[in-house]
Length: 275
Image 1: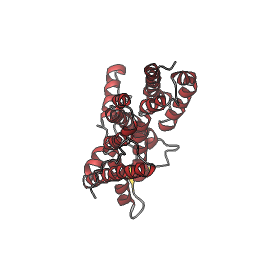
Image 2: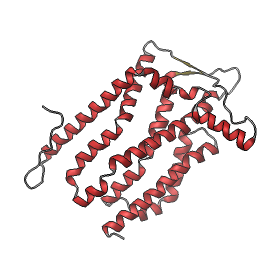
Image 3: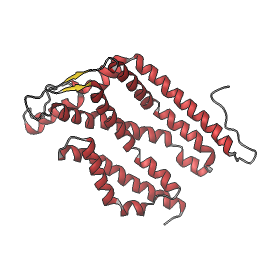
Image 4: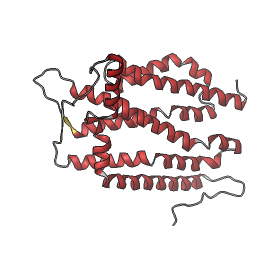
């Protein structure tokens, strides 16, 4: 049976529950296959994935560290923000640890690389249920969803992850204690901060669809703005080193995304004639 099965529709355009399940099954199958294909590619390009990407923040010439050093020279006229070395080592303490980490990272890379295709499958699944005007407005799902996701990935990778790695990896309660970080813990820090940031940047897309079905309104978002800002600050405090500067840097784009979400909800209400 071919993987690209057409969605069966009745003459009137209606599909039964079982037909919806059959269509969903093929969307899921194609999505899983896309993830696995990219995961296999990432598995064979081990040096690029690990040395070139995930472990790059271990080197002093990482883009973020060079930018900080440039700011230090330009604004402070010293080397106070320059990062010359990481004072910790990565270790592996289990027989299958590195292989298991390699497998996990490959699957994660497959998920990230296949994300635009996954959004496209979501679009194909919901498209038959939309009216012509709704299809026109929702047609940008793949582009904007991918753009926001990869923007969040870049934000987490170049800002949150290196700050977390430098602070936590070099933090010492005593000079008698040497930091030897398990490679799995290091990778988890990079993955969680980058992927979590990518998902957080999807907030406008989520609000768009919630506003379309009337679950969220611009008035509700405005009423809960203060509470939402507090939640954003808490999330920023969790995923960043415990200092005010890092927390503010991470919070600013999340505040902007929240305000964009309010604008989107208000725009949808005007189009639908709601107050």
